[in-house]
Amino acid sequence: MTNISDAHVKVHFRMEVDEDGWPPASVESLWALDLGDGTVRLDNTPWFVRGVASGDVVRVDVDDDGLLWAGETVQASENCTIRLIVLKDGGSTAARQTVLETFHRLGTTGEGIEQFRMVALDIPPEADIRRIRTLLEHGDENGWWHWEEGCVTAAWRASAGTEDD
Image 1 (cartoon, rainbow, N blue to C red):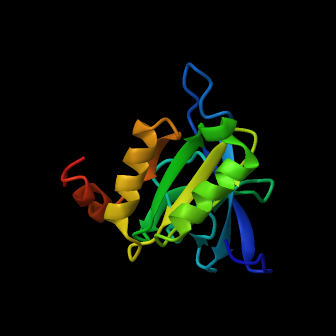
Image 2 (image 1 turned 135 degrees about the vertical axis):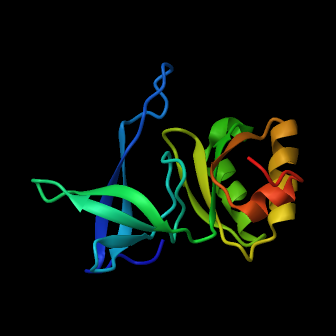
């Protein structure tokens, strides 16, 4: 994420919590840049919200308390959101940092969160998607992490050899 400015706002996303209690909250708030026309551009990587990525333009509604609530995505950024639960070294701070640095060399940005031993990756279209996917699969096979797709693009799907999802 970039530095917070006066143009940044918090946008709230409602989420469905499954029978196992995941995700661990029914609302996630993301930083976004207010575009001044009832839309915002997301400016950080979602931890739990599915179907959106950093850079997406989202329509917002304001409630009676002045809170912004996310609506439809009006322009996708072509970024992907991938989340990992880091297993290596119990998901320690050092292990999460190593994961971030390793994927950063392949063109991603992201951040880690201690509470869930997670790393959320923002993968722009110019990143080395094939190498990122190969590394994700390798790490999963070796028990370093589990990963999931939070928001993916046609280019991401093509890297697995499956265009349709």
